[in-house]
Amino acid sequence: MPGFTAYVGSMRSAHQRKGSLSSFVSAASGAVGQIVGQVAKLRGCYVVGSAGTKQKVELLKDKFGFDAAFNYKEEPDLTAALKRYFPEGINIYFENVGGPMLDAVLLNMRTHGRIAVCGLVSLHGLTDPVGIHNLFCLVRKRIRTQGFIQSDRLYLFLQFAEDITKHYRDGKIVDLRKKREMGRLCM
Ligand SMILES: NC(=O)c1ccc[n+]([C@@H]2O[C@H](COP(=O)([O-])OP(=O)(O)OC[C@H]3O[C@@H](n4cnc5c(N)ncnc54)[C@H](OP(=O)(O)O)[C@@H]3O)[C@@H](O)[C@H]2O)c1
Image 1 (cartoon, rainbow, N blue to C red):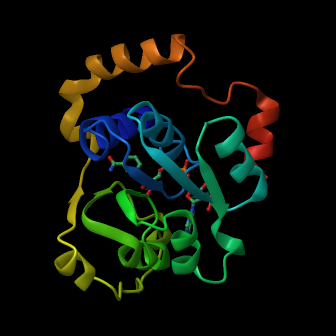
Image 2: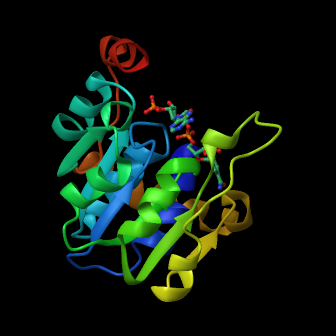
Image 3: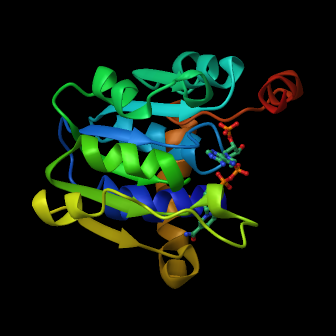
């Protein structure tokens, strides 16, 4: 299901167009994010991911082929961190977390950028969710923002199985098959 979510949100929405666009994925080492990043690479994007431990950051770069990755918990200023990785701005943001990361992303989006809203995990369980401050960037930068639910697109499942299986067999999409790696990731 997470792989299908990544396929629907990435190949059929966020990264539908091929080309050298800049793409940012939050919660990038999660079940969804790791596939999104690899799909974005297949589409020709420059891809950066954020994750919450050093081990996850290493996996993103060494195993999943992200161009760069950073530990958001070690960044005192998320806006400055994103500026460092995207000096010209972000074309596509695959949103998994919300909260302060979304606020920082909005400031770093390019004009006519795109945000695919998959989830807002930082809000899970909060009874009083924190608001977003930089929403006016949506207007000023004409950012197209769209949420999606994978189950609306179940008609794409066979296509997903075909496409992703092919990339998997060709070694263009990898997963964490070794338990040792899973252990490292969960630390
Ligand atoms: N739209 C849909 O159809 C659909 C379907 C499935 C899932 N989703 C959504 O997709 C997102 C990712 O799902 P997943 O299955 O990949 O999740 P996952 O494998 O459980 O990974 C989630 C990761 O999010 C990060 N995280 C947790 N709390 C956070 C916080 N407060 N701020 C920033 N990062 C935080 C953690 O990684 P770090 O250690 O790196 O922080 C965690 O490992 C979730 O928002 C989920 O609700 C949507």
